[in-house]
Image 1: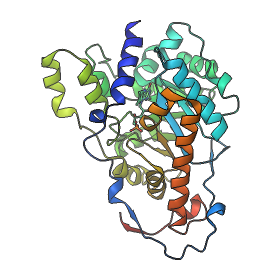
Image 2: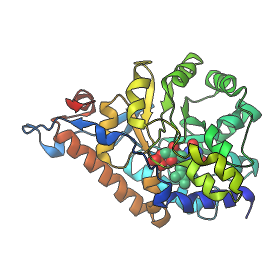
Image 3: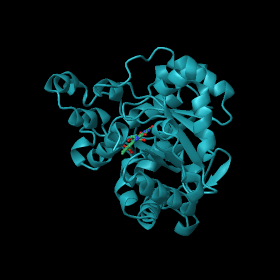
Image 4: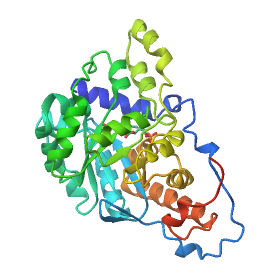
Length: 335
Ligand SMILES: Cc1cc2nc3c(=O)[nH]c(=O)nc-3n(C[C@H](O)[C@H](O)[C@H](O)COP(=O)(O)O)c2cc1C
């Protein structure tokens, strides 16, 4: 097993453990809808569908980026991709760096011929290898959009992680100007705040995925992987570093009404999807909740999607929202 494959396998094993889920909540428990005792709706007619990148989705939910380059990688991606195709929701693949470097075939498109697929590379890979690598990532899976992830804390905790973040914004700007598909910028669990969002908007980014604190903690996972106690001591105060997802969504939305906004980081059910849309997101994404089902089967992933979609439908019914547009103005008790 290569070093990258071993790291990815460790990530999967550790991400499944509750202790590496953020100790602090993503903040959705503080967002309370006003209950509508008179919905005046037929449940089966509540419309959860969304349009993303000009295409139909059965729900405003994306399967979040997870890893592929390891022992279980192929079956995980196959289960996720087949489920995305059948359930008609988008899927983000995990980092394509290893596959592109090693010249490995990326079969995800074969399993999801019609689904919306989102490619994935890191900001520092973009800075090091330029837009040409991003275009290869897009082409290899016929991606509908390209995600660039920003993970400075995760890289710091990895002893051999990237330390040079100069020029990442310029590389993103070039990518937005020349790539053949839209670019989505995401974090991995510390969140993208209003100042960073504004700098991204200023260089032409039209979609941001928040990936705030409250879900999978990469500082915690990477810290568990390193053996050196000195490095663990340095990382210790940063285990819960970051910004709550629920707090960030309205702040980033207030920067721009035109920005495409994907809520992620600690969303754990369909009610969280409803809350994040009410706070200003256009779409939502979940990663860790799909990991265990993805290790099992395509049907297990589909069942998870259906449960989340039904929870979203209930939340819409109980707030008297016939569609997502109505949900976005449903009354809140506290915000
Ligand atoms: C096992 C695993 C692997 C991940 N790999 C990637 C990756 O390769 N690229 C990326 O952008 N994000 C990656 N993430 C981060 C997720 O996409 C997401 O931003 C983060 O986990 C927060 O969402 P969650 O709380 O729903 O898990 C990974 C997450 C998990 C659980």
